[in-house]
Length: 533
Image (tube, rainbow, N blue to C red; front, side, top):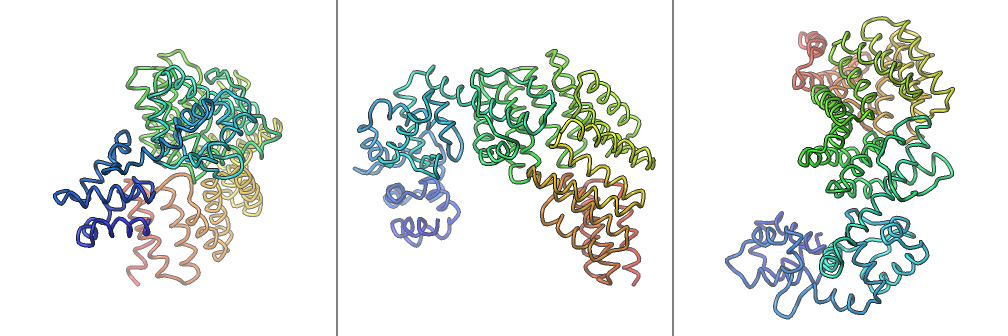
């Protein structure tokens, strides 16, 4: 970026760029940092003294017109691409056009083969030929990417040279590939879970995996591509499959690294299904978005989405969201202190799971009921429920959610004062979350380990684990951050670090007040004695 900005400034002139540095950075970014494109854009601006840098940036912001804007006199970016494109063999040109259609940072060989409906070896030969012409880049073995401007050119070629049914067919095949493969990952990591059989049917078989770890490697390698393409596919006949792709990829929402992109795609899914009046897609989109809000600690928004999910699922006669909405609403009501509602939702989730022989669902609801009982002060029943959930998951080999059950049991044992047993369960949970790459749950577990150490009067270790939780992140958003800060403050206060404790509690108070949380009063009680000192 800095080199690109220097080139742009040399051509435009020192007096025009510094005052609009951000706009200038937007211009060179729109040029994809390609020297020829920057030279053309800068030359256009230099020749037009009445234009500001912001005017040029606005013109280049429109992707559909960007290549047309990047021409000045005899210079044109499009013309240089035309030279390479005109030399391609027909099958190479087809691959160039169709593979440029999909959003995402790059594309794997397997995904490209599905898009083109060709064998992998044939596809690789075509892609390597495109790399040789510099129309495509080899990002890594088996992965390919377009320069941003080359992708725009490839799409313009597809609009000009391909029939609409062929471009739609290519995008549909890629969506089928992603949905089939993500579903296989989900089935391997959530054995016995009913979700895979409730998703939209696809024509592609997807990739096969030797085991869970290989499947997770694929999912997290492809995460940005899968989420970008899911959001792009929220149209026409691809809408339902795109929503289901997000649902099947829901573990990405808990990963930390992909959470924001997942949330953005989920909001787009709801907007798209609402705009076309598709009740089935809308019910599922509400289900997905409810989970997003729940993980962020936005309980009112999560409950509203879950309620809408149930409404549209009934309207579409779609049984799929039922368990998830009841389970989520039970968690939400627990965190909002609506204990009667919470127990009703969770008991219904347990009943529905047993009727459907859904062991994973039953175990999840039992563990959430354990958390509710803990909130109500019923510690021994809470421990018993968590053990029931753990036994079901262990018996059925449901490893992905086994960590959640260890976590729940660890929290219950901490509340019961059984600290060593609690730490054993929490460390088992931590191992499980690390193995399944659920980074936000890792951070949440570090917080619970900190609480256990603090209860056992080990303030130094409590502070260490609370700080680790803050560094990693956690489920529950600002409300959970406030709780972590309270625990860290208590540990620091015990260690004689009053100033640091005060800083933690002051931030926690601000967060609780912003949330309108009753826990703000607890923090004021912690701060008052320090104020007196």
